[in-house]
Length: 260
Image 1 (cartoon, rainbow, N blue to C red):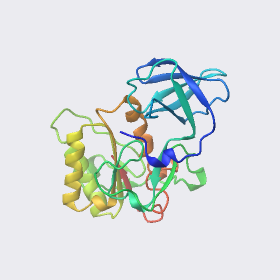
Image 2 (cartoon, one colour):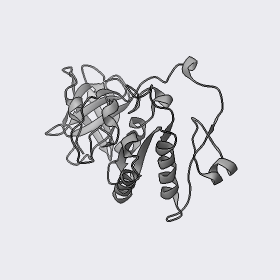
Image 3 (tube, rainbow, N blue to C red):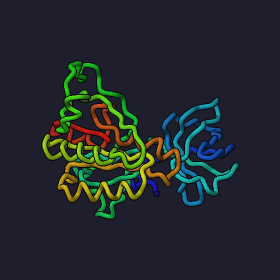
Image 4 (tube, rainbow, N blue to C red):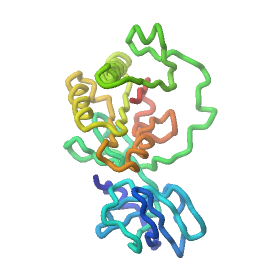
């Protein structure tokens, strides 16, 4: 998993620090000149392959961050570079039918992204004037859910159960109904997802003909805790935090958005 090229193009200030502590994915860094703001992306390693996101300012000279990539080889005293920018995600029509990781890299072995913009995943939520206070039923097209336990539009719901009880099948059917019947856009975020399950879902959605109106974002089971922690924020739809993978040109066309 590599940081996307757009992140590399962010103008950087001449601000570097030194690693003072590494505890798993938690990294403390000392900066003598300028303390990076929270959510700033830092880079370390011989090829700047280790990406760290600042989550706390401990004092006037130290920050604490969480690594979004493996920290093998990272040690005390190593140099850390301040990118002067936050984690970014692609926005635009070009993301439809594509699969991404936490950095916005495409992982579906298809062509590179085109006609997209890159924006921070940390944005202010929509103002209260733009939020709806009306409660509506979200029709899933599955009778037992719509009758016995209807879902609220814009709300949240969870599926709990052991292995093999049909959670993925139910989720797949809901996505299929959303895209096929409601002509909406579905965002699926796999946090700690098994590679096999993600690949099967991709093939099933492609076979059902609904992949063209889907976006998939994965922080897989084999990736660091930091990547799995942040990938959910990368995939947040527009109606939640004003910055998701479907905000820019799609928001005027989206009628319903379902997030897995």
